[in-house]
Length: 292
Image 1 (spheres, rainbow, N blue to C red):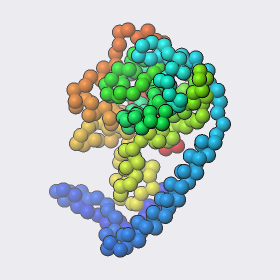
Image 2 (tube, rainbow, N blue to C red):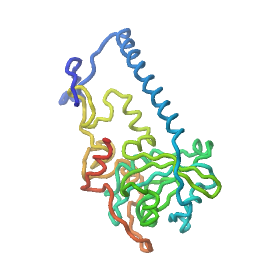
Image 3 (cartoon, rainbow, N blue to C red):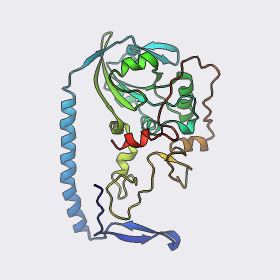
Image 4 (cartoon, helix red, strand yellow):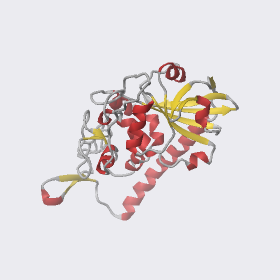
């Protein structure tokens, strides 16, 4: 239940005095610090519980996966084992794709988390490769990667290859899957989906530290707090960032358009079989998955 705390609400006039913004109660420094200290106890407990869960994750068994499963890469077909790029571990993000649809209708959630992964050297220093396994045609989705400016390994996983990789799990869903390579053999060691993808994010993590949080309707916030934002879509870029869902565009597309990049995904040499389905315009799947 999303309870609303009415006891500490105050309002502050915004520029021009035509609107007001709910704000926390104003107190002295000692009172403020006392409440921060109390919250810090809970934060530390949360951190320690996360450490304990990670320790349990490291003790999970693993299951062998066919290392010869074929992916489509920049230079053509590659085996799953080759996606490790010689490293011992692989973290693969399974990017949802809406085949044949324009850039604005591609998955806002997958765009959000993939945009966050910019620096790979820390992963590489631990013998881990990160790669995107897009659940759509390579040529079309690679144009999206280029439009977004993502400099990360990018592969297409479709048809029987995708079915084998996601054994027991439905396609056209966002997944993070971890693999271990032992010689020419590949093993799956962990997987998560939906809100588990927040492991890739820093923007929402920083928002969660602020007084207004993510500003989304599902959050438990005090009465009057701004909660007008859709998950990761807007109908405009800076400075308004007008929320819109469904419709609009994934937020990270707007700066690319402003920089003059083309979002045209049409390709004349697409020889791969097309596969449909994602969370593009008009689909509720991303909204429901983001809360779970």
